[in-house]
Length: 318
Image (cartoon, helix red, strand yellow):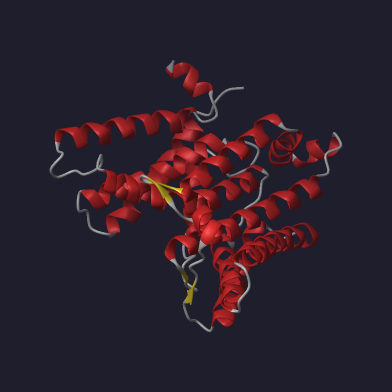
């Protein structure tokens, strides 16, 4: 069974996830009065923390498999959310604001891709500049102030509500993960994403439109960042110009933990899904045991390097 898991693209992270869950559940059963991992309050907090990063990481994962990076997703999240918030404050329906936000995120992703492919610049450089540009634009359109965003009715229910301890944002995360898994593993577009990321010249030689595939991946990444911004704003009830900080690095970290190859052409949406949960589990456990704040960065950093090393050492054989 373990050998079969190891051959699966998500095998390593599945094994680590199972072992981590067993350890946390055992600790929760042995020390119920001091380690509150199994309480509904902790489950609710953990499920609340996972989806926003998770949705961003799904978009970043597709782009990384295609062989590119996007460091601007955190800034895109906050910029598009502020556009939505400004429209909502002006009296527009939240549906209209959300639609404009999604279109804006898609266009920003498309712009990133166009700059990378047309100017032949590394995506790391282009999106690093984009990160700073859209962060400044967010501060400009908001006047560096926090905007209230508390839509009611169907929009509010879909964007953020709870079924027992399960928030609607987590359901969205699961649905998007399933959708992207199906697309990447069972549709032609997914095959093209892997082919372009694995060997651009070979993909071009067999007739794949490399430029179009990469533009689509950049656009999807921007759309996912904007969607995460919509859900995050609905959950918090407000939009702050600083709420997207560090999401870009955390998303790449989740992808690395999930086994996405930094060189492109290899990865699994299931593994990224579990990688996001693992990172949040580690943070949750450290908070539960009262570890100092700086331990969070230390352990997550160690996890990233360890995961990258394990994925390289135990790369599944085709």
